[in-house]
Amino acid sequence: MVTHVEITRALKSYKTDEKLSLTARAAHLLDWAAKHVPTKYVPFNLLYKHSMGQAQTPQNGNKDVLALRRRSQTIRQALEREYNRELLVQSGMGMRATVDSEDVVKNKLPQRTSRFLAAKAALTKTVERVDIKELPRRTAEDKAWSDWAADVAQTMNQLGNGKLDTKLLPPGEVQK
Image (cartoon, rainbow, N blue to C red):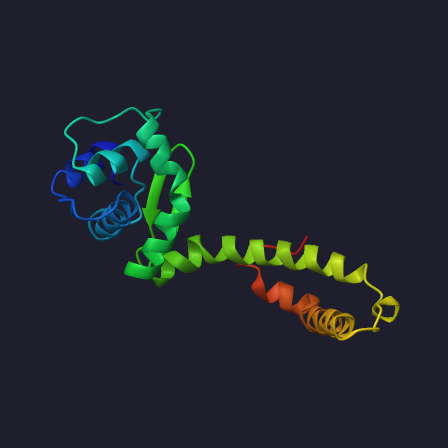
């Protein structure tokens, strides 16, 4: 098991690219860490320190560390675009990049399917509130909206199959 001390020790050999933006530096460091200390979370303050090439380790409550934490979405995008990795964030622990397909399947895919199923359930409820026959069709714009609503309803009917939802659940989980 890699400890905080071992992560700190490993990060000493990391060299930041000062030409990159803070977001790109953080993504670069997380990619490096995925290769050198795989599956280990990099604490936010160490991520900031080594991304910026600083000698001193800032406190987690430092304004610059907090600003880095708020950039997680753009760091995620950079990791996906530049390194074909997913970002995992654990509150109080730090961030890490996924290391391989197994890591993505076990740690990111369940989260994404859960969010998809929740969004699908919310959309289904909204679609169920619409009576297509009640929609006006007076103008071309009305017709376009009505046709679109009908297409959405038809698509949701196709996706509404409970068997599909069950297939999206990770092993060992039951549909609620």
